[in-house]
Amino acid sequence: MKIDPIINPLDKLPEILKNDLDQNLCTCNDVLKMDIINAIANGARTVEDVKNKTYATNGIGCCTRQVERLIECLCSE
Image 1 (cartoon, rainbow, N blue to C red):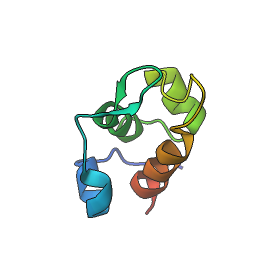
Image 2 (tube, rainbow, N blue to C red):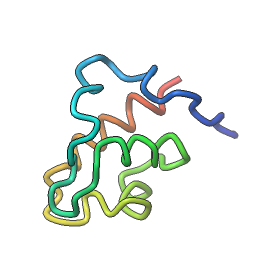
Image 3 (cartoon, rainbow, N blue to C red):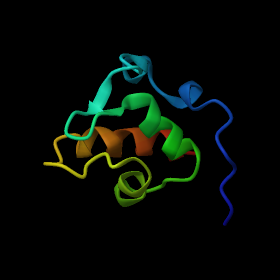
Image 4 (tube, rainbow, N blue to C red):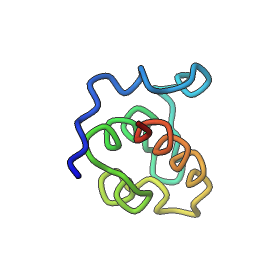
């Protein structure tokens, strides 16, 4: 099954997740929240995919749950 690319990923996020887009979500590797959103919008469907594209979650993993939440929101039908 082919998944259509996300036109504007921010349209799929609840308001609370639209905060701090220009701040690091992954502090270990200085990965901006918007970079993670863009990775998901461009095909990352798992935490491992996001890690491979952005290095987020590649430190101690404290951002893993937040990355999972973004994937849930952005990849839902």
